[in-house]
Amino acid sequence: MDIQTLNSKYALAGQLTFTEGKGFFPMAVIENQFAKCEVSLYGAQVLSYQPKGQQDLLWMSDASMFQAGKAIRGGIPICFPWFGPHETDTQKPMHGFARLLTWNVTETSTLVNGATQLKLNLNNKPVTLEMWPFPFEAEVVVVVGDTLEVTLSYSNSGNKTFVCSDALHTYFNVSDIANVSIAGLTGTKYFVGPDKDKVYTQTEQLLTIQKEENRRYIDHTGDCIIEDTGYNRKIRVVKKGSKVTVVWNPWDGAKNMADMLPDGYKTMICVEAVNAYNNMVSVNPGQSFSVSTIIGVV
Ligand code: TA6
Image (cartoon, rainbow, N blue to C red; front, side, top):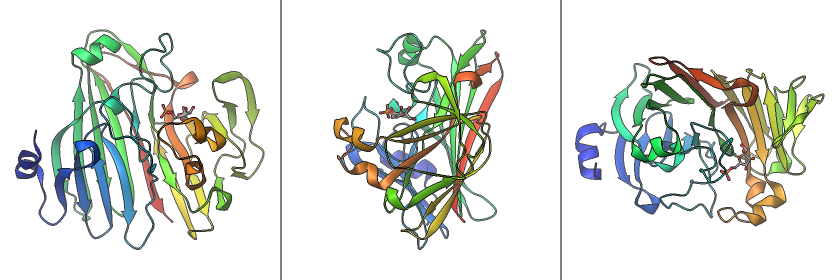
């Protein structure tokens, strides 16, 4: 659908319009009494969420590519129907295909509390069936209020059970990684990177980042608080329907990434709502599953 048609069907006067974003990707721009937010239809990816009077809560790489077939580096990438590399075929795209396809707008509305809601949808098509042989219907619902709530739901529209993994791979914008600590993970078991065999338990009350971190906290459903003394704020990260939390900062590894500046790691931290590993999601025909992340300044 072109921008003009999107606006004529789904714009909300004074709150939501569609425009052409970077890479010519159609984008919803939402601005209401609470915040400004941009959502790319490519990947159903929230790119920015800036509550009034705040720095953006979300980080976007200055070197991100906005190019069909490549993932956008920043905001909230949607990982589905697998998280990380594909289990048996590493030729298939990292983190699934949901972040590499353009989603359709199905509904926009203003909620009773004044928040703005946008619904996007992606169904199976030949290109998805080639990579993953299951009929599905997926929806992303973005609610922009004094918090940002992003929900990914998917249902099985075929006749065989599928097992998948997912993530809301949120990149948070921070003043400097040296000013950041993360609470809410104490006592939780985690492994590092893909090495599932060595399991550690976090003993520290606060996680600080002083090197590359790629921790996968298992059986973790609670909130995290990201404290940033530079921006003088705490961000609460709430999840629903997610049993794994991933904390990632590539540190020096940013140098080897085509879509991140070498010092890009200094102003970001990923705290992700994930289902994977010992918490894969199994969806029977006709059934559905949802995962949400809710972020806001406390
Ligand atoms: O969620 C952390 C992670 O799985 C890391 O291992 C890291 O590779 C990252 O995601 C980014 O993946 P991407 O495909 O976006 O480069």
